[in-house]
Amino acid sequence: MSEKFQAVVIGGGPGGYVCAIRLSQLGLKTACIESRGSLGGTCLNVGCIPSKSLLNLSEEFHKVKNLSNKGIEVGEVKLNLEKMMKNKDKAVDVLTKGVEFLLKKNKVSYFKGLGSFKSKNEILIKDTNNQEKIIKTDNVIIATGSVPVSLPGIEFDEKIILSSTGALEIKDVPKKMIIVGGGYIGLEMGSVWSRLGAEVHVVEFLENITPGLDKEISQEFMKILKKQGIVFHMEHKVEKIKKSKSGAIVSTVDKEGKTNDLECDVVLISVGRKPNTEGLNLELVGIKLDERNRIKTDKKFKTNQKNIYAIGDVIDGPMLAHKAEDEGIAVAENIAGQSGHVNYDTIPGVIYTTPEVASIGKTEEELKKMNIEYKIGKFSFFANSRAKAIDDTEGFVKILADAKTDKVLGAHLIGPHAGELIAEIGVAMEFGASSEDIARTCHAHPTFSEAVKEAALSVDKRAIHS
Ligand code: FAD
Ligand code: NAD
Image (cartoon, rainbow, N blue to C red; front, side, top):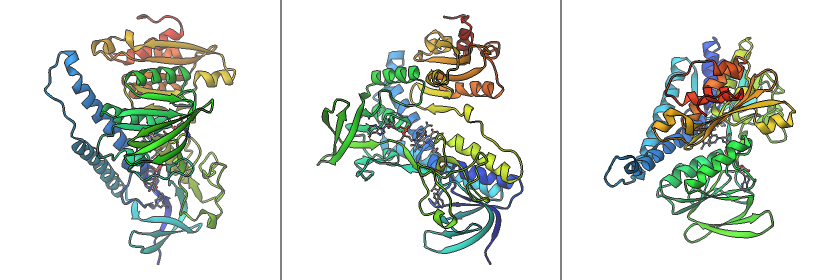
């Protein structure tokens, strides 16, 4: 007899495993199916965690090499890439095993294998030995995430033509690396390999890097990355990539139609990701997709079938781990009869380069488009005492508030610890705070967070330190 569950989650990424834990906390008999052999999804295995490990280690390497400028003499600094990669792998291993422990602790049944629909209430699981088993369920939550996309006619070989997964596994620092796409992955991985010694070129189709970010931040970001040695080919499109004896030749074309061939050892294609619905047998249960092949859901994450839900990268919205997690919690609460919801106006985005870039709420460009009158408060880290004390003064904080009500509508930061500083603004926005509320909140001295307070003061043109 098939085992019977109240809820089965397909996919053990940040959306899926968090959802499974919450369902179990709420008293539902829950199973989670994962095909990659370890839990944590893209994020823990080949995304957020390994990339942040390499970003941190490469930054440490870069910093130590430059310590003598700060009066600390060190001997010869050498890179041991193999050891660095092992450290990254250790972080992944510890965290993915940690998720397995959490599922056990929360009494979630974990099935290793590929899940697919046999019917609306039956899921077929095929393990790595091709052994099949069917489990029954009242509800199904699809959390199968996303996979990298390539350019038409170009296949990843993960040696010369890399996706983000290959860019996390390079064995020797390449002499020259071409990155197609100046988005999150291109700039984070470009920073890693540039700090470790590669000549990095970014080919970006649009006028600005990181489309969707506040334009002023994005322009400052590119200026800083250029100073760090990354070369940008803006408004260039990659047409062809041909493998050569020693690497690849990337052919670009600019907006005037002029072509250029760039030789390199490796090329990273980071032009976005696509929803992963392959192998689920969605047709059998008639699940509808949207125009970009994402699973279509309503506000409660329900698909067109009343017991089947979807969350995370496989549906609409930013492809971010914390967005997937929050949707996982919300859908679990909805299935259990509660009123789970996600506030899409306060989902932060962080790029973990040096300096970090963080953003929440509306950008100036969006407010203009929406005809909303706004005030701007800005404060530079150059005038922040903590930043000055440790000589880390690049970037600024920008707060956008409603011109009439002073309600905070968005905040955009580039600078030290921006990814942590943004949380304060997220909480403020959740409580419907005004910029004055932030400005009147006591912030410890000397901290980077004082730059947030000063930016809030500056909305009312009364910053103290600028
Ligand atoms: P996923 O994490 O993709 O998990 C889906 C899981 O489902 C996968 O493990 C897959 O194996 C499994 N699966 C698929 N089909 C089946 C099936 N039929 N049966 C069983 N299992 C199946 N986001 C951030 O917020 N911060 C970051 O710093 C960040 N860095 C990133 C860096 C890189 C290099 C990449 C590639 C992504 C990064 N992201 C980051 C994005 C983040 O990883 C995703 O948004 C997040 O993992 C989405 O979670 P998810 O649960 O929807 O899907
Ligand atoms: P992206 O959408 O962030 O950036 C893709 C870039 O490629 C865009 O700037 C686009 O204009 C450009 N592009 C597209 N086609 C091109 C072409 N033919 N030639 C040149 N440029 C081209 O995508 P990504 O960097 O692949 O990342 C995918 C997603 O993963 C991100 O959107 C993000 O949601 C997630 N992610 C998040 C983090 C983080 O939170 N720190 C880190 C990595 C990835």
